[in-house]
Amino acid sequence: MNAQRITRRQFMGAASVGAIAAASGSIPAFAGLGGAAKLAVQGGTPVRAKRWPAWPIWDPAAEERILTILRSGNWFRGQGQTVTEFEGKYARLLGAKRCTCTVNGTNALLTAMHALDVGVGDEVIVSPYTFIATYNVVIGSSALPVFADTDPETFQINPDKIEERITERTRAIMPVHILGIPADMDRINAIAKKHKLVVIEDACQAWLAQYRGKCCGTLGDLGCFSFQNSKHLPCGEGGAVVGNDEELMDRIHSYHNCGRPYGSVKGATGYPIVGTNRRMTEYQAAILLNQMQRLEADTQRRWANGQYLTGKIKDIPGIIPCKLYEGTTRAAYHLYPFRYKKEYFNNAPRARFMAALSAEGIPCSGGYGPQYRDELIEAALTSKNFTRSFPKARLDQYRKELHFPGNDQLCQEAVWLGQNMLLTEKADMDDIANAIRKIYDNRDKLA
Image (tube, rainbow, N blue to C red; front, top):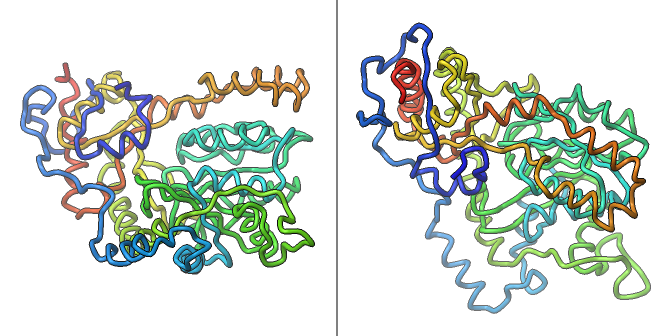
């Protein structure tokens, strides 16, 4: 499998198995471990033989409630209270006033876009370094995803690049707290306020990540989450929109429930607004209520182990841990990222480094590629919806602007470690650091 094109979900599913790619080099030996040890990729003994934790983790204590729901036949949220219970508890956990659950994170984002009246002919500033759903929800709303370049040091949208991308059609900024690491929300919110734009947080990988003591997803106009199988709060598929504006959240609830009346959404007929069916099921919510019991402790462990690992690898030449913005109180680390600088490894391709690291018992991935070069962008620009919604001159100019050097650099240098690897002990973080050091010390011996 191509290391640059492996998806995050494929990587998370295979994280305890390993292999992806490898490395080679010269430069004075780093004073680390394993300088004389033979690399595992060449038949030596791996630094780690112990398996990493599986994910997701099932709790048998959840089974009685789920079976009760299944046996009752009340699987639809309109016939039960389980989804409503989860919505209340999740909102309180995040510090938000309201939460409405959806069938998945993609539909949470689509719902937020609709509720804030972002759609046909609008432009949305987004990060190019994200899961493809962020692009798709903008395109699917017949709006134009306008990319502001990535800051390679932080892996996040670069606030310095946002204002230059704003046009008279710009309606929203959609920051993505990618990999569970907070974006620079002070700068983003200030830009949005200056230009009268709405902010939709894609927090689909950032449960309980915090910026200045507040949870990601509660810092903009609306925040969206995913509960897909690989996520820290999983139920197979699921999502949520959170917010603090009561009337807006009433509209979101009504919209996700076929446009039926809800709260302040009233009318003389049975369906006062246009809606759709994006409801979560009762048994999904029962799984989430159980999984939520472990979320705070797991998040704190990932954060502590991530900080410890950063301290262990930050001085290894050519290995650059992700920089956190000054306002970051806690990163959730859906994936732990660092950058690999091949010039410190005798210009060995990142693929060789990753293969060597995987062989040492440390599974890794190269993360996202430059998806704005994929066929979906041109497919959207040439579609009937887009050619009717945007002037030809704007679409032609848009094509010329698909150049993002910061993101291209990150796509070539990024290395990801799975979140399940951070649910262990400090000794396990030492294994990761020792494996990287071993590769560095043996960089001139790589095949």
